[in-house]
Length: 341
Picture 1 (tube, rainbow, N blue to C red):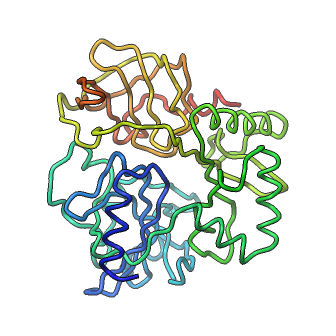
Picture 2: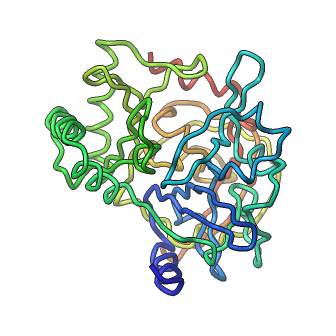
């Protein structure tokens, strides 16, 4: 794909609500990286830049002192890479958040300095569209692997039957989508409106009620389940979710302590969970972290700190509480996971 075609594709995905992977390559330093960019409706491409989290970097971009701390290696998109989201800490594996990943001492920075201002800049890292050489979307990745692997094709057919969904309602994310030879689990993306995704998620809950909720890092994950002896992480893309102009919201007040009750969890399954709440200062809470999808529900009390933003939607001004780093900002966030057991 030519540079111009890639740039056109980046711009076409400006307001995508999908889970996209951008493969970037810096010609200057001959280094590559895989960037996950969920929900571009929050982080639109302005001046040919995009936002995301760096999941993998090529081995030649890892400093010698980092190698023992980041031993997880995989060939992704045909390139030997090191996983940046998990660090070895003694005998434990520690999951890093976006800020920690952004601060890693690479040989050469895969990210760039934004050429514009946005209230969301601190949530994800900025990258240049000019460095993109490929964009991988879940539906295309699912079709590719089904064509290449008969066992996977059979597995997907059984999964679709269990969840009563058509092939068009499913996609593939994670390592398998990036061409890894082996994957410890499948990241399956389900597409639909909010009502359909709730039905699909209820099926996950029913499966886990019988088998138990699988855990990671000591937490039960409500979106993870076991199917035919294979771990599956379910991700949900709400095709009826529309929050125009939220990416251009203006900052009203920073570092505000808050406490509110969720009154509407229609879009709790959205990759960037979005809740309607009771609060005199704002009407919504937005958590800029994919790991919180499917964990918080109607009636839960959310307490922590964040920034109040204001944006215009459907001709009126609305305020939203943004938590850019929910793992750091929400009080006792683990309770939302344990309530699913």
